[in-house]
Length: 254
Image (cartoon, rainbow, N blue to C red; front, side, top):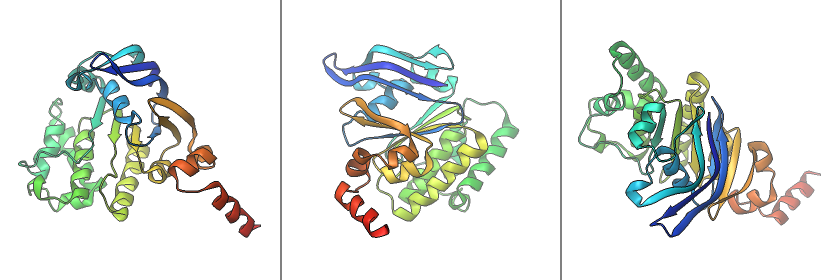
C-alpha cells in the first residue's frame, strides 16, 4: 500500500536528512519506525504526508508510492484526499473548540452525515474518556485525553494509512497502555494501516508486527518485531538491555 524506495531528503537544498530510505507498509499492517532524536523519523513522515515544504525540505531522490501512485511532491491536501493522515507530535488539538467539534473537523471532507455521526460514536467507544467530556473545550483536557482526541480526529477522515508521530511523548505509562490498546483495536477492526514513529521502542514493538530502526537518516535494522526484540543491537540501544545483562538472565534461567 505504502512504499518508499531509496528516498533522500534535503533541507535548504544542502542538509541531507534521509539517505536512501526504503520501507513498506502493507494493507492493514501496523509498522513501527524506531530511532533516537534526530535519526530522521519525523522527516520520513513529512516526506510521506507532503509536509516537508514548510520546513524548506524536499525529496531529492527516490520514490514514494501509495496504492501504486507516486506521491512525492504532492501537497498535504492531496495526500489527505488520497487516504493518508498524519497525527503530528505534541497533542495538537484545536484548544478553543470542544471535543465533539474537534472530531467533526476531522470529517470535513466527508458528506455522509449518518456515517459521520456513527463514526463519532465509534471514537467515543475507542476512547471512553472523551465521551463524558464531549462538550468541553479541548484545551482543558489532560495530555493523554488530548492525544486520544487527535487520534480520533484523524480517524474521522477514514484514512487508509495513519501516520502516528511519537504518541507516547510526555504521557504516563498507564495512559500509554490505554492508547496502545485502542490503537491495536483500531488496526484490527478497521484494517487501517498504521506507521508508528516512536522513541519508546518497547511500546511500539508491543503492538506492531514489523519494525524499522533508523540511525542518522538510514534504515539500520529491519524485521518482524519478534526478531527485533531479540536483536542485540536493538536491545542494547533501544530496549535498555545490555548484552552482559541478557546473558546473566539466561544463565539464571538455565
